[in-house]
Amino acid sequence: MNATTTRGALLAALACVLVGGSFTANSVLGDYPYAGGQFLRYALACLLLVPAAGKGAAGRVRALTLRQWARLALLTAVGMVGFNLAVIAAERTAEPAVPGVFVGCAPVAVAVLVPLMDGRRPQRVVLYGSLLVAVGAFTVQGWGRTDGTGIAFSVCALAGEVGFAVLAVPVLRPLGPRLLSATVCAVAALESAAVGLLVDGTGWLRRPDTVETAALLWQAVVVTVVGFVCWYMGMQRIGAERATLFSGLIPVAAACTAPLVGTGSYGPAQAAGSALVGLGVALGSGALRRAERRRAPRGRAFRGNGRPESRGIRVPEAPE
Image (cartoon, rainbow, N blue to C red; front, side):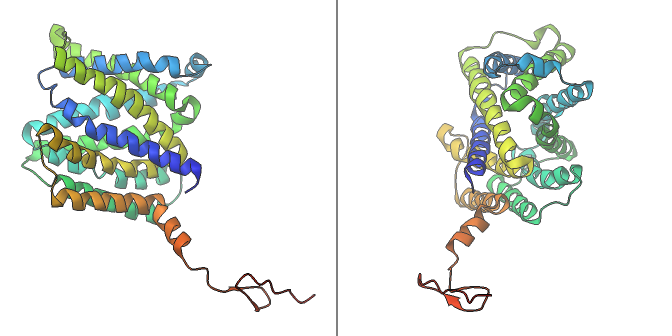
């Protein structure tokens, strides 16, 4: 990998690890109004991101077309607010592993959709790597109890995860990672407030207690501000297809942190799944092939006239 690709891979990996580790924060927000929590999270993240958006940010936002604003609104509705709602709804009748398995299939969907939207064929190596990542994510999480409703909402969660990557591609270039993150957080805060007023009425927002405040701060500052910027910077460098490969690290990070808070264990299945995810990422990102080329023996080099050139001895060519 060159320096740009390596940085992009590391940024995408960091973003997904932060999201996976945030599941422990979600577990303490079960009694807090969903829409109100999302509003606080995204509103605070937007306030923190605006100063980092850079010069000319206001002009770039004003230059967005109506179609681009509609895309941003759909991105936040599907990939942020809708995604979290779908996960919560799925877990009412299904064990958490079920939506996790569906979301783990996002790399496969993105590996197919993004090239088709660009008018090109999916890359086989990326598709094969995505399949390995999906199998690894399934191995890490396993399968759990569910019903038709749980599966339906899990499919909606998968659509939200795919939309979060695919819908951002056309607006990433004009806005850049930081301004895009700030803009989607602002739109998501407004949408969360609207959902809260419609669903929960006047009780959609309340003052969080100490534990809830810490969890919301973690989600806003670490997962959203740092995670979103890293994710879009990674996507900018390596593309949505390869960046989404790293979403397989989300269940891996969740499995690794679960024993720390006593909500799960890390055993042979999790280790095997983690290895499959790592192999899929290495294959799909091209790192595995580059490593193989570097390890390949040079052998004897032959010039155009068929004479060997080896052991550092340069054989002069015959004049033409």
